[in-house]
Image (cartoon, rainbow, N blue to C red; front, side):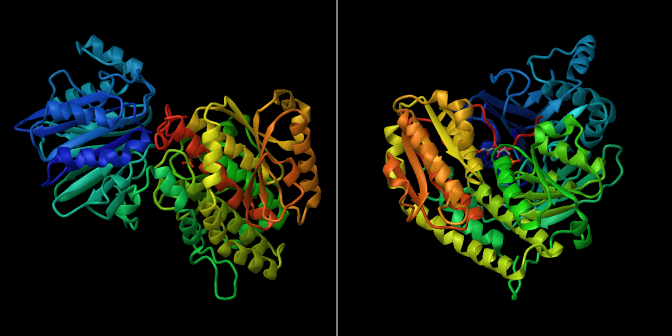
Length: 615
Ligand code: F6R
């Protein structure tokens, strides 16, 4: 939440910062602002609303050109999304500018203290207190990095801060506790950003910052310390994301592009995980096989779409390993005092690797002695860093706020994990593992085929532009798919949408059914557990008898559903547990099209941000 960029080097800082903010706008778009050091002073501009408003402001009131600058795109926490509350925040003399991601929990006390000393604070934000504290501290120590260290020691909460001071025109200073911050090291230039996407067009050399560290960047030097000033160890790494991955590449939205990228994302996530004999080799798992063999319980924590991947993981893990698996919303987990020990394997699923609820859940699990495995799409993010082991998904950068390709790759990762647990514990036969791995390797082509047949789904979505409510039903692994379909529709089309286990319908929700109500039903395969299939066919008849307009997602060749489907969406035949890989895709397309036809911003839905770094 909130995107931050800092730059010092030979280019126009304003141009670099604005380009970086464009890449980070997915992190929040309530307001945007920049500050540039030029001609011995500070120049700043900020505007409520999306970045485009700030760009218009800069066209009408250009800033002087300077080589050092910072910028921010906001997801509001303290204070409404107004010009005054937009970052950067400056001290009264206008010599310090600071941008912030996170929440400073003791800001009320700090604010009162500053007011007593005669500081005039103009915004409702917690961040402005930091600008004033930095200015005050700098005036006594004369060094921005030292001032930042001293100020950070007084702050409580989660924060990433980036600041500049007009008296140190060649320096940008950052600080990090809980929220993300990475350094980009170029030739005679350096960057600070919430995410490498902000600088990959300039450099692929990055440095990961740890918890409670302060960094000072100059054109040709990066110095990292802890909050007490002791030199800190840092990890340098090469960013292998292609810069074009963060561009729309001819698509109308990032979401459409990311939906189309799913076959490749799935293939990339499988790459290198299977040896010549067809066995799984998850070398990056730093948890020894003995620990996995002795695990008595798996607990998965995640939020939103990642939570739906976790629900599907439960079916796969329990089926292939016979270990009990619990799934819990990360935001609820630590507050109920869960029973955990050294024989519990906790899996934290997070695309961004920064979700605060998930981070807090994993910290709680580790404190109780459990081993934590992260499934994440972001190299070096806080969640993988703080876990005992990590299984990376290789979806590439996901820019659209609504998750699509990350979800499919999370499914691949949980299937691999389930099979690997089955392999090391001897609960799954080698030939069964090889058969599933072969199916997984083919599934990218199935997703491709689904994508080629989506025009009727788009047409259907357009016909429902004025609907108020859409319900989603599923059974078995189709139930989390129904939840995911409903979530996509809510967040993108701003429609009332709910997902139910089809069997639960008769226990209450069936009262919602009325004439013409669109109900999407995810039908399990008629093969294998055909009893499930028969039961859902009955459920479709029950809702249709009450007037529902049935939209049925069913496997090719499933003729039993035909008489009861007002609209039939076909998906390829897949093994039962893998069906969510194909049945989710039409629901993504459906939500995306409905959002478009309702005039919504598909990539940046209202009130949301991609990386949720507050609890
Ligand atoms: C929905 C969506 C969110 C995220 C959730 C967790 O489309 O994107 O529900 O899935 O905020 O995010 P990560 O996976 O980054 O922890």
